[in-house]
Length: 67
Image (cartoon, rainbow, N blue to C red; front, side, top):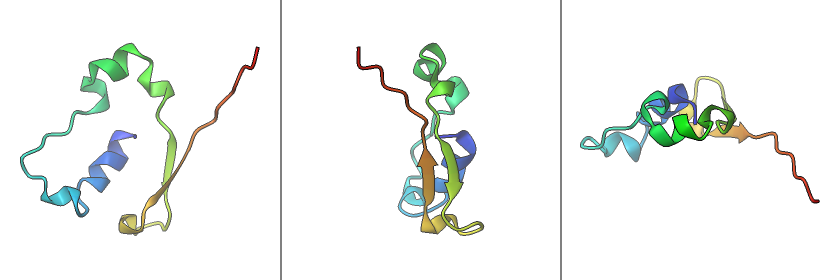
């Protein structure tokens, strides 16, 4: 997920109760960096603008080669 979405989600239950966990930002994640992670981050938008507790919608564009 994009870092800004992860930051918002981290403020919501149940994640807001995880005070001992430190989240790794995408630019600090070696797998994200080495495997073109920026190409794997979905487009994300809130279900209801201004109400992140309702949820998010994420979408990928995907191509499948069958031969």
